[in-house]
Amino acid sequence: MTHVLKFATVLSAMIFLGAAAQAQDCPVSITEPFDLEAADIASIYDCIGDKMPEGYSKGGDMVAKDYRNWTVTGTRHGVAGAHGNRLLMTYANDIAAEQYLKFAEDGVMMPVGSILAKESIKINKKTQAAVVGPLFIMTKLEAGAAAETNDWLYGGIQPNGKPMKFRQAFCHDCHSSWEDQDFLAYPLEEVRVGN
Ligand code: HEC
Image (cartoon, rainbow, N blue to C red; front, side, top):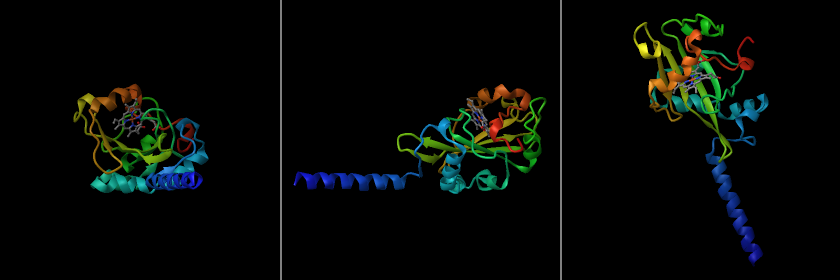
């Protein structure tokens, strides 16, 4: 009898875990982002890729709706460490693409109207699943429009389509490390398009 009960408990636990796994976005076996190989990242992206713009667009944001039609700047998602160890992929709009893809290191001045949109995937270690992270956005405004951030406007969209709230300085303080590159950090060298 105890045996049967135990079996029933295990069974219901399995059903429960099964249900949890379904609610998760995409199960992963490797939960340390820095240990993910290109193939692991490809299969995560296969699972989660379509859900990203779907979620970001829910609030009607124009960048969220459009960015996947822009120029992709990486050969795959990279794990740079910054941005919460997430898997990152940046897209450049038509105004930004030519200059951005040079990945130039000196005297860079991005044209007004440049937009960089960086989608992100978070590995949730607890649930062992890859989940959609925020869409991070940088927009180059007209000269003098935002003196404190060198005319960059930082924005972010949550996976549910709602705007993120943060201070501009939170983003710009870190991006200030790349002043000669017009405050752009660029993808990791190993995943840059054309490298
Ligand atoms: C601790 C440092 C740090 C902070 C804080 C930070 N970033 Fe970044 N950001 C980076 C690095 C490093 C990269 C390049 C990594 C990559 O894309 O692989 C990057 C890249 C980006 C890009 C792609 C354009 C580029 O620089 O090449 C955007 C867009 C972006 N960040 C937006 C934001 C926004 C919006 C915030 C604030 C909510 C923010 N960042 C905060 C370090 C930071």
